[in-house]
Length: 162
Image (cartoon, rainbow, N blue to C red):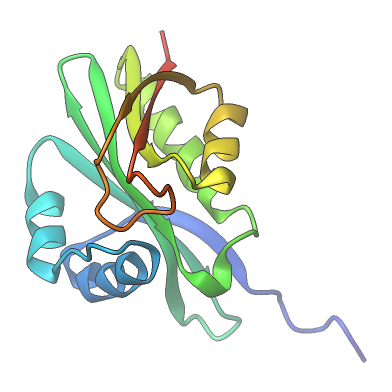
């Protein structure tokens, strides 16, 4: 008989210091300049940033980190510092789930605008951000050392939340 076992569950929750090594692995797979466990722990323990993780829970209750987002807030503005999804989990909507949950949280916290930088050559990410309402507001040349864009340029994007 098929269908008797429950399906694995995808959910989003706050990432904790204990998740730092998983964040390091996912980030290193996504970006040329990797961050350390200490970098992630400092951001998670800082007062002006929050980290959300998207996880898969197996039918046996084992949870595995698939991706994460770190958002820094100051006054009524926010900046997405980084967002990454593991290579094996890309293209399944996990990045969208993280972005949507982060935007909901920022809206509840009365943040007016959110900014991010993205490699100008990262078309899948740019397409996601534009579909969420982000608009291009500038370019930073030479922002990335080893980005997809040959010039290492970052596209600066903004979402008006309020």
